[in-house]
Image (cartoon, rainbow, N blue to C red; front, side, top):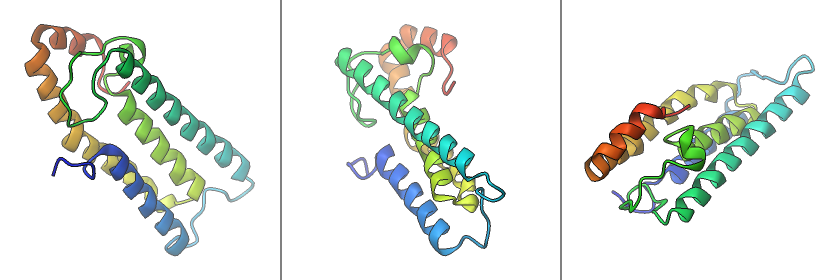
Length: 154
């Protein structure tokens, strides 16, 4: 099932949708906004969402500059190690996680905070590990050096 539907943005919107439903239908009276914390939570959620978007944009621009695919099931033509990829091997996935956390906070979906580790697990199993296998086969020595000097997430 390596079609458009099996992509990180679809998984992100699915998890975010579940968080929205949880916040609106099954909140059980739990809230992060109690005792005057609404402004802080709103600011934090905005910073997380904005940071996630910026990370994703920086990564996409760098991948386009290097003329390689952004699609996780595509065939890379170049191992991108510059720009934001000097700091993280997976800045787009990191941005997706920041977006999800920011949306969960924005929705005040306390119970959905448990979705974040599940989302990370899905990203690693469905996308990151297969992509790393592909890059390891295609770019052998360059990948080995890159993997040693740059962390998977941060």
